[in-house]
Length: 418
Image 1 (cartoon, rainbow, N blue to C red):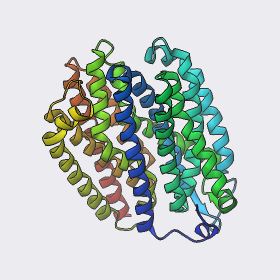
Image 2 (cartoon, rainbow, N blue to C red):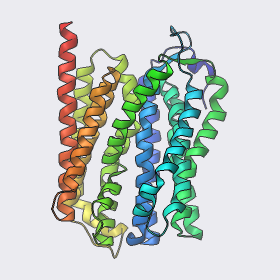
Image 3 (spheres, rainbow, N blue to C red):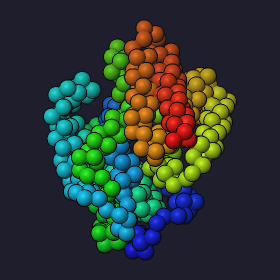
Image 4 (cartoon, rainbow, N blue to C red):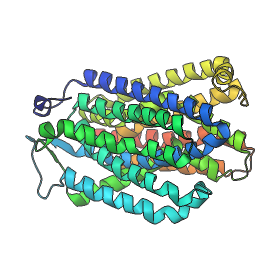
């Protein structure tokens, strides 16, 4: 999977790294689309709501914990780099953090179990606990791999998780539609992926990296990136949870269609943007022409958003009717607006790692938090379900993006005057 030599010299081949990570991201994107099509097709859009809410909640937690991955990426150094006194140990931090995360999920279950999953409640807690604790281990391991640009191992880590999840869910659906069993099929791939990747690269990786922060600094930096990443998750994988919690009396089918649409239409840009977060941290950290790089990437995101929106307006309703016969068909305008909203989140997925690469943790967090809080406020507005969904998906990310752009501009200006 990877060689010892890959950890003995500073990373330079970012072009090859981008290609490998992008290919792996395409693999998990296809797997995600297959799952999003398969489950409602087999169980129906109404019953899909429970599956989608667990998926959304699990990946909201995962999105939050991806903040750990990004901080580990930023802090990881090759063995030959200067060390600091009392530096944190990544493996020890991973075990402690995974234990704390698992305990937090169990301890908080009384707040959400019955509200999100009526009639199932505590049966959904164990799979979520396993998902959260296992992903914490994955986050530290993959963050270390990103930090030393071990691109082959990173790509395997990304692709393996999504592929295993597709296989487990498809196999489960052959025998049962039980939402608890399906929840386990969502959760177990995190643990399986960690075990497989760690066993494959541990001899090459062990003792060849170190962190440039103490435990206290690592915990504080991780806490800030986690807050930001939870906010990011609320805009992405956690959005169906927010929509469900703010729409308790909405018709199940209408809510299910909106959740399904927000997942399918926004995925192309958002999945790629989220998967490349740590890669972009590395890229921005090592480049001097950061402003030019930022503008170039944002131009690509905007162009892709316009193309997807146009295709959604033109072909979206027909494609939806073909994929989900017998279900209510959304308008092309709704699909196009959802696509445009994904471009705004995609733009945030570029400005955020740019801020983190400059160690602007406060700005990184502020942008995502403002976006999430604005989104939630819009969802609470006294509007029809579809209207407030559209407003929330457009206004929230736009406000967060404005915070990042202003902060990066001011920060760059201050650096030039020093």
